[in-house]
Image (tube, rainbow, N blue to C red):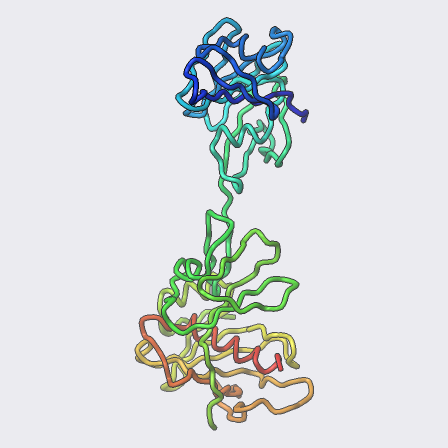
Length: 367
């Protein structure tokens, strides 16, 4: 890819003298006493000599390019008109988003972006036959002298973010926490705490107004959890009852191995190989959550682990002494509750309860 040899020319009308215009190029201004200049006059005004060695292209308001011949009169706009002078013995052509344009031997990426009206985060691609298309890097130029007409197109990249296990997509490289939560279907009016996890960095508490830069390498997940959690006192094929549709989608998309099963008169959601945060003797457990018959009107409360979770030091974990038999297996009960028993059937679910589980587990190893 070669560097293009072109000069941008701006022609501005003189508000003080309707009989002349200013011709600007390379930071210098020339007065031209003709408001209907020919292509040759404009080239001479910016010292493009001999004029036969140059092509002059006019940028139209619709971002099309039109060649202005040496003796052709250029039509100027009311305020400012843009031209490009290109040192070349002939014009080459390319298409951009199915529109055909003339240029010199090599067209810069910046010109393609300008003609397409593409924002800074948009990508510009060159079509290839029988091989993958090529994304044009910033600052590069593309040689147009090969066989055939080069074809370019713009594409807006999509940035993704895991919001409490729900993958959302954004056409922009930045997104507010509020918008991300709305896309994930989480009620932003409830008293949540929001934690942003980025690889290689400590977890960061963010606010609804925080702007997340999705282009930063290592952005992993936005976690949602109740603001306050108090310690309380004291292979998967079974689908014996249904969860909410959004719960099941969340578990499937999140790659969980899960079952819903009924043991006696109690209903359980079982998550197998649930990964614990670093800091426990165990790496993975079976996690159980009791699902009341009237869920989601009835609250999800506490959670259960098998085998029992322990710290490497053997220090007892608060309010985990009770045991619960589930399908003849002994589970350790973690007595963790929302403050003031705040539960919203419209907004709370397995999804938000797993946020409570995750924060409760993290809290004990983050001391």
